[in-house]
Image (cartoon, rainbow, N blue to C red; front, side, top):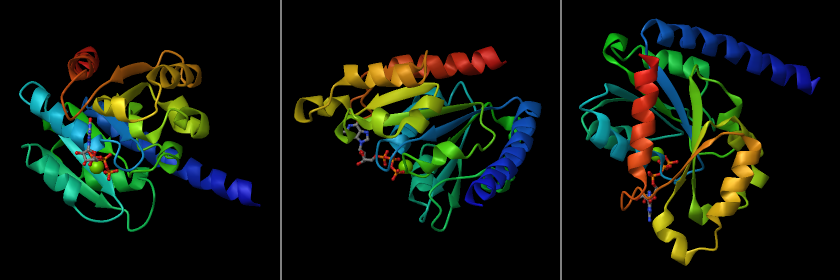
Length: 217
Ligand SMILES: Nc1nc2c(ncn2[C@@H]2O[C@H](COP(=O)(O)OP(=O)(O)OP(=O)(O)O)[C@@H](O)[C@H]2O)c(=O)[nH]1
Ligand SMILES: [Mg+2]
């Protein structure tokens, strides 16, 4: 009995996500679903990205957390609109939560909407929210075995940002191994090696995001 129940939940979510997607398409908004384990650097990447792109791209951010509005406040300080979702315990965002949050934005003004999912390397990958693309961050202190141990998120992500490379001298982590495993799980995945602390490697990421938006237009 368990399997059909789970399938029904996911199918119901997919229908709502599809409606979200149609709404985003009507407004010509590109939507990224940004996932990672807690603390890999999602909000740090968004802060940097906003600083770099906000004069050329109208960005909106949805922050998903179990509790608190801390991340949305960090984003609002950068001068873009941010809406916080508190899941009240749930380990992922779903289509319904995004539908509610989106009503807070003036959609005609946005080119890019980034959904920062709840920090978790498993559940967020199972729930579509209406995004054009799932992307993820893995930070090097988490270890190079993570693609093998948590394959679903890696297999669904079209871009992998390997963050905290400033810490490579202090941790046992092979970036090559991450690259190899991630490329096997998601052939053609775009991989960026960055430090949101020093800014190293971020130029290529900014260019890639800008190209996504340009191609969409
Ligand atoms: N050394 C180093 N620290 C980083 C880097 N990027 C982020 N951090 C630090 O890592 C911690 C977590 O960063 P966040 O950006 O809050 O991570 P997050 O993924 O948004 O975390 P949650 O929303 O809680 O899941 C913070 O203390 C950041 O300052 C980096 O490139 N290098
Ligand atoms: Mg965060």
